Length: 137
Image 1 (tube, helix red, strand yellow):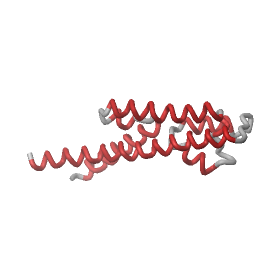
Image 2: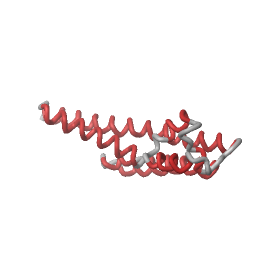
Image 3: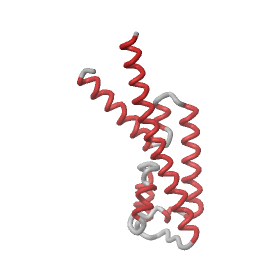
């Protein structure tokens, strides 16, 4: 494979990964896996929304809950905006709603990480299959 082809393939994998992170299911949508993309978007979106509904945006706390925030930021870069808003402490959450909200929002972030990895793998596997067809055909 030529150097420019490897570079463009690596760039394509990076774009698929970034799309999958920016919008859950976006990487699969770029790969023309529309049904899978919709399922991923709805599942991760609803899981994250339930976590926010239970605990408010106060569960996204980049200051005092860094391990949870690390998992939550995997949902989308928009979580950083919510983290910025809640960092001032104007949305305090205590007790069970805090814990349940953190669990749901973090779980949706980790699910999105799995979907990001899957989208990048599918893009890679598709390119490998195309190369095999070009060599064999």
